[in-house]
Image 1: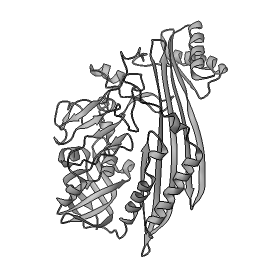
Image 2: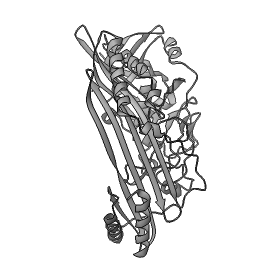
Image 3: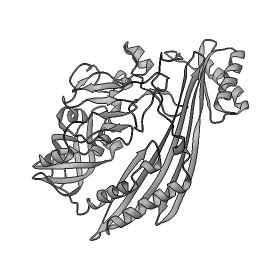
Image 4: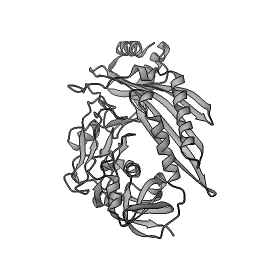
Length: 447
């Protein structure tokens, strides 16, 4: 059965046995990936996953069930399972089915050609990326990971109150991670890029050369003396730090007392240079979406504007509790996950400074390009962090050498307040991004 046939049969049978209202949440994903090593195909994998969750109101109570199969005999199982647990589940607040928004933004075009890309194209792109990386610098001894992949994702939410939301997305990615050696020293570096249209749109040679540059620039690294230094978080490191603390903007975290931003709406919580935006409607980004996990139409939300906290991320439940409008940030961790709150396409609005300008205006300082140990080294409740990192030492406005064996320490909420410059180098490669950010000083532990 296809999903439409399954949904119609499920709802018909559900009404016959007494369900007042019903809803399905269907997810289907497929990925094709080619990995090459030493000029040969190392892995060729096709992975399909997904499933369907069902919830329905029977005898005045909401019941839940889920399945990975869309077969006729599963319909009875879903209805009976949901009816059984509706009798035993107790909830302080009854879930509600949503009838849908008045209107929805236009869906981004689904690229059939991308989804149907021939395996030979993936293979040749991966082999070309490896060849280019190995030829770019004699110090590159291996492409440790070199892959090109295509991912497809389909989401459907339908209920008996009139909600019907459907989207299909496809994405191609290319990633290479290389090893460089010199004078008995070994370092690594990587780079990746994506396209929503075709594998051919990805500049494979550029991805390879950037990975090589990332690796060889780390040769000759050593530590620096412990002190407080001016710090530039390059765009990738800035995005890592922001992503580690996104839960502090969640209304769920605020309500549970897990966020220091509780009670600070309308107050200054960051430098006036910081504007934080969640925009799922932006074109040509990997994390776009026209509706959230509850079927609410998405929109652009300014979380922080010129340093002032404007709103938290809300789903319909948290918005109802706070007496505000939902920001359409309902999320689900998979087809059978619980409704939560999360961002779609979160980013710090770019400024006007180039990364080169920031470096040139730094007399003695550090540019951090990679943060490590983010799960263990961050505390979202307090905002404190202590993270091993990699970067480059700057003297008299120039990058002098690579730096390793150091730890950067600080507080995320203080970092927001202390940003002096915001770069213009915003690069969308995921769902949480940032341009480069410059701070007057952070504590660096080295030798």
